[in-house]
Length: 102
Image (cartoon, one colour):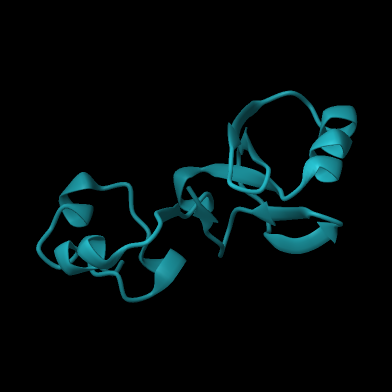
């Protein structure tokens, strides 16, 4: 448990006292994006990077909450699993030992 932004996803937290702390203030001032650790929040994100990946997901995956991204969509499922990049063209799994850019 690291209370400073020093270890990427390994320092992820949902504790508002940590991410509003003085240790995190300099990181927020320099941030170009916000990311979160899906596995730490108890979810798995299917990261769909393009229109073909989204079309595949609509045909192949159960409906769930989805969020638009700059390149595609994030489909969010309750529960955790191993993460993997490139599980098929344009599809990554973000959960344990990973982060997802919000």
